[in-house]
Length: 335
Image (tube, rainbow, N blue to C red):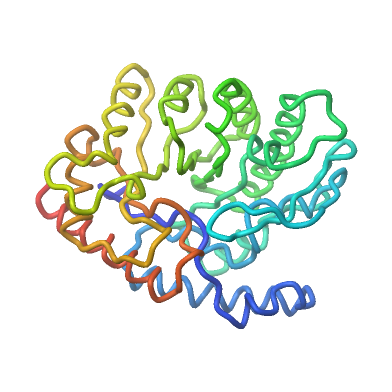
């Protein structure tokens, strides 16, 4: 793997022809339209300089919660609740034993195999977040529900790996809720580990963003079966600051944790803020990367946006990724 890999981290704004009729397309027509949108988005990603193109911006999914929940038995979907940036998701209530009716993301794997793309990373919604964002009207505890979701995600990841076949498959477990209840970090640990239990041939990523305390995550890292931690930093980093990057102080804490472990873990460094249209200039992004390199070896550092770029226009999203890649190239020349 090349040093300082630039990676896509999740969602990207859908073309209007897909987003405007997303729920009204019939299944066969939807798959063809989603494929078209994926190919167009892949073209943008590759032109931007990305080395890891994810699954083309998640064109097959409306959003991260409803997509898997709607493919399960034992959950009834109710009305929308707000998540962030005036974005909403349709919240579900668990009323019985949850079962997976069909795979969540198999169409994306089949498409990328057809395209002979190897530089992919499949994001899946983590079991703790699925639990935290659902009403529980059936299981005895939040822990029991999280573990049930963990078993569901284990089935999903096994099917994705089986469909992918030979070679390592990168799986990114998205857990935006992971540190929202500090007293439940043991549930996060156990449910994520359940998701990947016994599965060979995968590289497991964990994506957490907008946490008030990454230390909670670092505390469980030695026991968490995760190889790469893709985290948000740019949103908390002052743009006009010179010298020390205050928004990146947790990089040092990550290194302190990594140094206590016998197995190697890597850091996905968020260098561009997905909540604003401001295009971070290349020198600023470069400074953020160079700050992280004071603590993390190049081969253990990957460069990404803070989170998915679906809240920005496709044009702004492309420019952010392009500046990120150009900054990475400048840093790489000096290594």
